[in-house]
Length: 413
Ligand code: GDP
Ligand code: IMO
Ligand code: MG
Image (cartoon, rainbow, N blue to C red; front, top):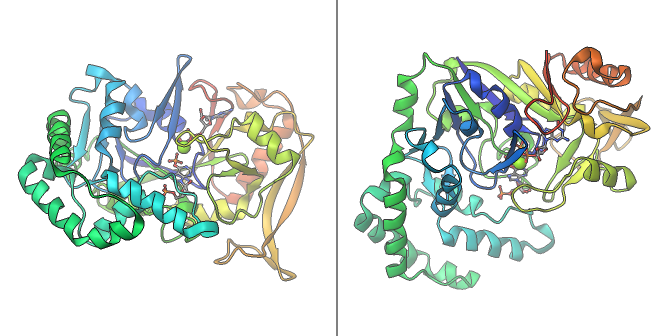
């Protein structure tokens, strides 16, 4: 059985929590795209773990974790993340030889280009994601499997730096010292070589087992289908996950779409249901909406059902997880975007161009006391009505309702 967990908004929906929660039913957990721009938080036994590259199945002691071909890997980040788990990862973490590598210059280019964009900046995480994927598509990237032959890799990189010297100079980025780079490559090889394998092959051999694909970023940040250019540089939707790990599409059995009970976004770009006033501040405060990766305050607003519906269509979700319901506790009323208005015209779909789009809201009476609830019957009636409305509008079953960051604070239906 292959299941995909995918974000339906602009990221940080709580994918990490859902993956950790269900991981014990799975033998293998896979990250297929993105890099350390992702920040997935898992809270187990009162301890908080922030994961950026290692799949969130890592706290299930029996699952094998895979960083597949579609991921871009920054070796120093991976090594420091691995150190937190020590020997427990032995034989439990594999990295695709085809995964592309993020090098320091990608990070420098990312930051320099953001500066040049000025008010058009995307608000990237500054992790070198875009430049690393750009090199992959331009066929000048380097892959994790190339660490096996450091002299050859170094020669290739030397040529790359010669080819890009003019561009680096223009951006004010210094060329790396090749001696130092060589040392780094040997260090990474020594730390990671054992784990670098052909992960597609590994997955094909295990297709009769339970495999969980952990999405990073989310649908509205997808390079093709998101709010371009304010997106990330990978295909974040379910079909992208399959390309990103080599599992043929016909093996995908189920797609769990993860959405917050409201909406957040980090970085720039359109966000129709954003609340910039007191309600937005209250959501940020109650939801602790500060980025796991960069610590930036997240922009907050109401749930946008047409945006979520767009994600359900793109991903083929057969189940939903609605997260952070408890954050809405204590609001006198809760609003939900059910459509849009543009130039006096009503739109009942998520449009190509969000400029000048105003949401149409339906308002619900608020509630208290959903925090930590683990049974549907114990939810306040108004919260139940809110969820029933969402389920009814989206026509997809809500299988999971999250009422707190802890693994246990979940209603499983
Ligand atoms: P991801 O990137 O989709 O994995 O999400 P993040 O981990 O970046 O952000 C979600 C944040 O909300 C984390 O700090 C989680 O611990 C927290 N969280 C997850 N589910 C809930 C919930 O139901 N209620 C509350 N209050 N916090 C939650
Ligand atoms: P998880 O997996 C939220 C956003 C950045 C920026 C845009 C492009 O934790 O949900 P990038 O560095 O990818 O080039 O930045 O995408 N972004 C995320 N926002 N959650 C994420 O990951 C994100 N990863 C990237 O803020 O707007
Ligand atoms: Mg996150």
